[in-house]
Image (cartoon, rainbow, N blue to C red):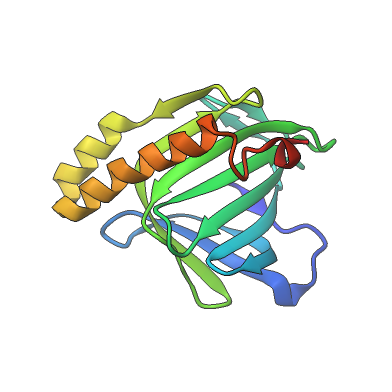
Length: 171
């Protein structure tokens, strides 16, 4: 993801790092810590360049990404809004709970993604990538089980229109 902060104050800017199971960083970007409530951390970031994505199409420069991470959940949710502010889509990652030290948030991406349209229809992506990387990196049995449970929990949030998929969050 090519994202960067907007005009937020420097003390709120953090680096977010997405890693593979072996610890290798695969993506990094800057975001602004918007809020923190218990285990929930919410960040705001802005795409600083236009991106061509095979499934999402063109992501315009200036697209806002509101990013929801829980330090006790095995997924994260990205709410993409068009530069004008309208909801574009949600992009969800199944990942190990992130670690946040106040300056850097790091998480292990477990490959499975869920693409969610504004009408909350969704598509599960990369199940084959999960299976391949589970074998490649030797995911522990409990990691495999938690990944599947977390995918089910994420789908339930979408289907039940729970936060951040509730009507208030989408408007």
